[in-house]
Amino acid sequence: MPRERDETLFASGAVMDLLESERSVEPGILPTEAPDSPPASRRLPVAPLNGLTNSLEHKRLQYYLLMMVADIALLLASYVIATIAYHQGVPIGPEMKSGLATAYLMLPTYLTIALHNGSYSLNSLTQPNHSMLKMTTAMLVSAALLNFFAFFAKVNAEFSRVIFTTGMFGAILLMAMFRIALSRWIVRQCGPNPKNQLVIYDGGPRFTLPYAYHVDAEEHGLNPDFNDPAALDRLAKYLCNMDEIVVSCTIDDRLRWAEFLKGSGRHGEIVSEFTREIGALGVIHHDSANVSSLLVSTGRLGMRSRVLKRLFDISTSLAALILLAPVMLVVALAIKLHDGGPVFFHQRRMGRGNQFFEIYKFRSMGEADANGDRSASKDDDRITPIGRFIRRTSIDELPQLINVLKGDMSHRLWTTHCAIRLFSVLQLFSYSCWQIARTHSNEGKVHRPICRLGGGSVGIGCATGPAIEAVPLLRSIRARFDKR
Image (cartoon, rainbow, N blue to C red; front, side, top):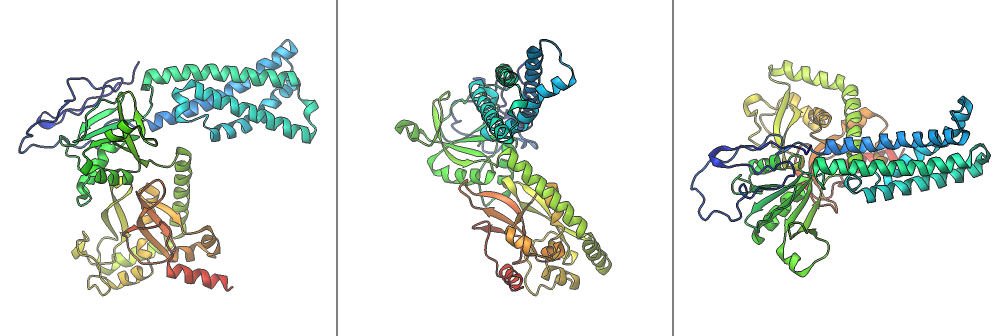
């Protein structure tokens, strides 16, 4: 059965253009022309808390795991069948082990190559020809490598060439059949493109992109205003769980939308009729909708990189919290005993994907300015005696390890060389500085909360510049260790 989607009804007659099973837009739901005179005052629809739809990323991950498990099972099954056929009956233990030895040796090599050549990728889910080509390439390369190492190890004679060849080609046939069946099933469930796409109309040409969600920026109060964090947060809620964003706006608004999409951490496009007319290269052509768009952001890291990065964040945060627990406990008790106020100070900050998050610090000021409305100065009279010490040593920043553990922020080591040179974890964290950085890369600007280990100015800010900067304090630390 096709994947069903709920339709959400908002106030004042504004209907969210959530799509039906095939994500196509019904003619009666989406107007083809903007209203001549919108109402003078009306209530905006409530922004979706968890996005317009569920994330398809988890489903894609399940499909990848299903393909991997199926490949393992079919590879082993193929060699079992080849061994039985070779011995003309079910062989006894040693003969079966000898026949499966080739599969056991080939399996890790095949999985390693398949994970890196795109055998388990987005295109492999709905394009069986692409999937079979990548799978066959991985199988042949792994077989060639196995023969190469077996030759130099002089163990070729221990393997049956008939079982090896029959099992390999049998596995390729079984995997190809499975991929064809899986691709057809995924297309019936999710459509030909297992991604969530969102089309935002903001004064540009209107079109219908099949299997995509369509919203009107004016109806839903979507405005990429960098002077209004609440507007950016509202937009981020609509972009939640979306894999690709296509914006159709006027020429004057393209720059603002492009800057917003670059900070969204998602694949973003801006519709351009002119590029369609001249047939420009390097743009995204949606032939089904007869429209083209400019690619302005490439999205997040790959799933494998994000998993490794998250594992790194969790492991280092837990280790740091355990090692620094005595220090943090002493600081918490000192703050509590000084004036009886709360231990932690928390404040809303703009983080990854232009969304708000609560940042944690040890409280270094009195409770008079609990919301942080007034910026701190060097000789601020609100700073407590304990606060002066923890601010000077950056100990007040240590609770942000909780933000890293929650996924609000992320670690970024200055250099591996620096991390190795610091002789202890406590000294490493005694020079901790945490910043929310806008990193620059060839993928565009992305708002990404960064937990930086090193030295420098104390505080949280939004820095525009290279992600790794030269900090005088860090240089002095490195120079001190180089002299030893």
